[in-house]
Amino acid sequence: MKAWRVGVIGTLLGASSIGLGQPTHVGWAQDALPAGSATTPVDLVEYVGPAAKQDVWTATVSYPVRGEVRQFDGEKLVMTEVDGASRTIPSAQIVLVIPQWRNEAAVEAHRLFTQKKYREVYAAVPAALQSGLAQWQQRLLIGELVQAVDALGNPRVAGSFF
Image (tube, rainbow, N blue to C red; front, side, top):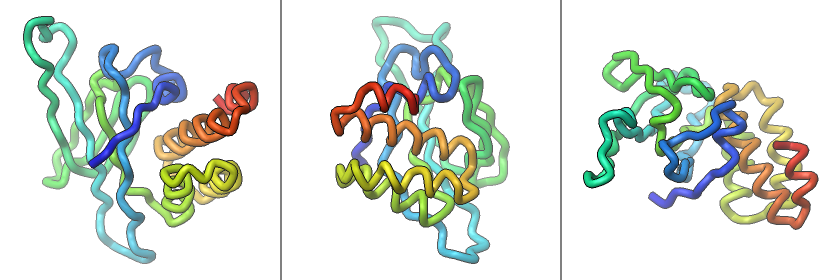
């Protein structure tokens, strides 16, 4: 699964750095849940152990977790794993988040971004933000909006969204 680097997500989430100085990734997302579905969404999260336990001579080990992200901000990611267990991970340890978008408006905005249709992203993201999307997913889409506007050659406008 291909992932893209997000330099703005840490600031959008309120963290000075996410991922222990490594690039923060937000991967290509899954489709939205079918309308009226009783299925629990499955987000994919990858994280690394605490910085205190890392050694410059040892490769960083990451751990994948599947479940429903309930909260993701500059402090922590809270999720319910597929087996029902609750897990809290400090945001600084998050390496990868692959969300299952909660509605079609978010799926469409993300799809336009991945297809580099940046002018269309400019209209699609605000619509998705008004669709009742979870705040942590809104932040991911705002990060894509910032990148899209910057790619259109408007860094000042991108900075205002940032």
